Length: 278
Ligand SMILES: [Zn+2]
Image: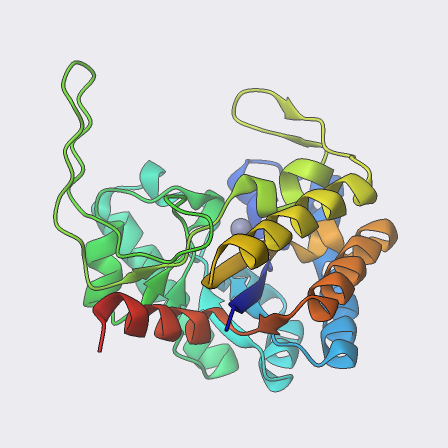
């Protein structure tokens, strides 16, 4: 029987994403603060639909907005690690990356009382040290890579990618990778925002986004006996009215077409059982 798992994931970046970009004047900070409004609306929707979510929260957000962070946990959703600042690990030294990881764990423990099993790097850009740091700190899964769309896998360490030689791959590690994609993320579709190279135009129709997200699920459902699709939303992006319409429409379609909604930790456990075999 076909099993189509769906993970609704939410990156509660709030102010941290703008601060990491060096945008600290009142307007970008208020744009991040809108994430608190978005969280309220998303929690209401998830409760009404009785589906679980997985919220990746930077330590900066946990410490700045402790009450919404606690409300997410109290509602029964999974909490994942998303750095302390929103700096990408690939831009950090190994020592700074480890300090980020430990400080984030401390914030999640002190403010919410959770020890996450899942990690998602800010801006989806791991360093060569990330996988080993996650393993050393007891994580079960990462969600930052893009090597598949529907099948979690064991990521490989020590990739060598010299310009003039074939790329080599190291041994797979003990973590489960829960792959992501920009095409399954609300930010590129919707957010008018500066990038490292220019401006992301965003501001697309919610119906266009919904069409793409539904088509990716429908393809999985019709072609794979077992698969996981992971959608990524940001409360400060998708909390606005027309984008909530996209999320509502997505949940409605998925429910009508056999989806099983699970947390990412749950999907990672099921994937590990399949990868490791009986
Ligand atoms: Zn983020």
